[in-house]
Amino acid sequence: MTESRSDKKERTRRAILDAALALTEEVGLAGLSLRQVAKEVGIVPTAFYRHFASIDELGLALVEESFVSLRAMIRDVRQGAPSLGQIVDRSVAVLIEHVGEQRTHFAFIARERSGGSAVVREAIRREFELFERELATDLARLPMDHWSGDDLRILSNLIVRSMVNTSEDILLAERRDLTEIRHRARTQLMMVIVGALNWKSRGRD
Image (cartoon, rainbow, N blue to C red; front, side, top):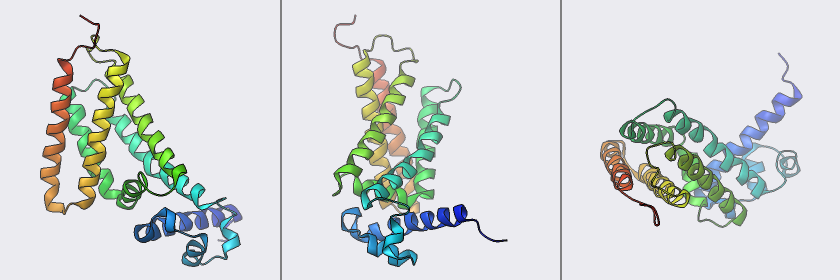
């Protein structure tokens, strides 16, 4: 069966993304050139522009790809009416599973969130901010009417930061260390949440 033009274009785009992920492990996005990517994929440099306008645009596509499935998985964790303990357990389990399956994507995010491209750094920051907003919305549904909206955002920021640190621990860990990481991540999140349940926002009795 003859490959259609759109299928061929998508296959080449996929190859560019995969090549960029592999190459940035060595040089980071800031050190990546479209000529390197084109050579790795086996296309002429001008063909790169049929898929991405620049290396930064390629980086943005990798950021979006890195977050989209994780955000969907974490959203599924919170469906129904799970207890706080269940939410924590499921979230940690999903994070460990996803980082394991999408290791190169998470390594890319870990490098680039403080890397050389301001455009990509900002995109990563926005993705984490979106996580925080979604989580704050969910937390507002819990029996926490003594919390202000600002404090709910601060709490969600603490939880997201904890999960970011956990994902970076997973990247550096051997498989035998995952049980300890899971236990530590769960304990950290439960400490934050249990303390939060006893917190009262300023100006609220």
